[in-house]
Amino acid sequence: MNRRIKQVWLLAILSSFLLIGLQTYWLYNSVTYSMGEMGKKNAEKAEQAIVTYQTNIGEAVKEKSHIGYVVTAYFSDYKRPVTTVCSPLDTDTIIGGVVYSKPGFSNVMQKRDTFDLRETDSNNSFDCLSTYITYQLTRFDKAHFDRFISRKLGNDFIGAEMKTGKHRLWQTRIVEPPTLFHHEMLVEVPFNPIQYQSMQMRMQVPMLPILKGMMWQMIGSLLVTIMLLLSIAYLIKVMLLQKKVDKMRSDFVHTMIHELKRPVQTLKMCVSVFSAQKTDEKDENALIMETVREESDNLTAYLAKLREVIRAEEHIPLQITSFDIHAALQNLVAVYRKNRQKEVNVSLDYLRTADRMRGDRDQLLNVVSNLMENSVKYSGDIVNIHVACRDTEKEEVMISVSDNGIGISSDEQQRVWTKFYRSNAYPDMMQPGIGLGLSFVDMIVKAHGGRKMMQSEVGKGTRISIVIPQHS
Image 1 (cartoon, helix red, strand yellow):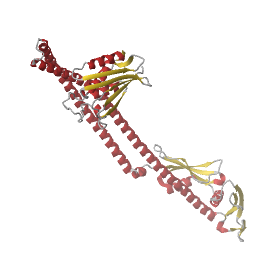
Image 2: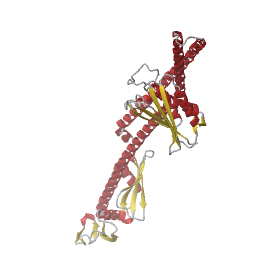
Image 3: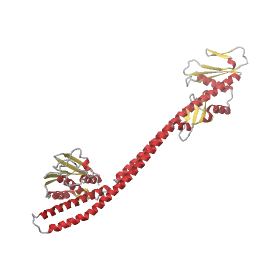
Image 4: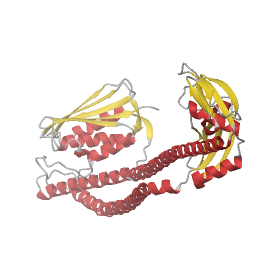
């Protein structure tokens, strides 16, 4: 019982840790996913802020510049070159890819550049070319850029840094996504791709909106965890109470056995004294004394069996030795052949090549004796018992006891191994017994690491086999 309680405790504690771990993992993934979505939105806002900045700067350059700037670029998906013009007051136009200056504005200077951008498509070609023209006609002011972006992004903006790389960046990308323990992210936005320039912007991902959005999920998870812990605490409390009750029951049984042994022994001694006196065989007193002696023996046997079952339930200290099982079975067969109340025929088939086996000799002989006793008890006036002992293919010893008794129905073949269970199908419920024999057999076999098997049919008899491992 104590071992089972410990196993239940261990399973309950492991289950609680597993559930708490799953809840924590689920919340972690939910927060991480929410932070990732927030990071995508921040990247879009950063990209939009830079596009707005570039548009405003471009308009200012166009209004104030007296230089007409023409940029031509070749893209992979355009057969003809793409040309962009930045000229004050729209002094230039493009016709068929050729730039024409309007007359009357001879004071406007013109600059021309041509780029080969065929490593990419032309989705953002005009924007990139316009951006290039803008930064050719003005000097980039980092302080002005930071102020402008700060107004657009608010407290989420931490800082920005211009980066010049070896490859052109055409699309915004997240360099460092936010994590649960690091609420900042790094976004790289195309700034002037033609000159390999991009803007790396560090932004804050606030946790408060994320936590507010997950508030009910977190409350539900917390309530489930608390309910689990309270349930486990209540379970442990009930199990401790059950253990206390079992201890009281065990102490009571031990005390009862101890107190009953003395009057039973005294009664048996008195019966023996009276039986030793010379009396007529037909004397009624002699028959009474014989009956008293037999019932005293039965009561002593019941007390001994009850004590063995209680001890086995608490702890079974096996004394594993190597003993002669062949001789032991022969002695048991001889004892049961001397039964004076029924005609008992016992046969033994010893099919092993060796006589010795490993196990607790006394306990295993008690097991076989219990099985043979049940065969005698639950059979007719003529009892046929067959005991067999053989080796299995897995280094095991199998001992079987078969009889021609009343048999056990299929519905009861599992319940008969339960303590104090007695079948209602027995024709004579006054048959002595307290339903502990087979439960004792089950406990001893399990203590040896073995297994049991039952084959029975009502009206035809029962065969019970025990298998004991012989691994050293």
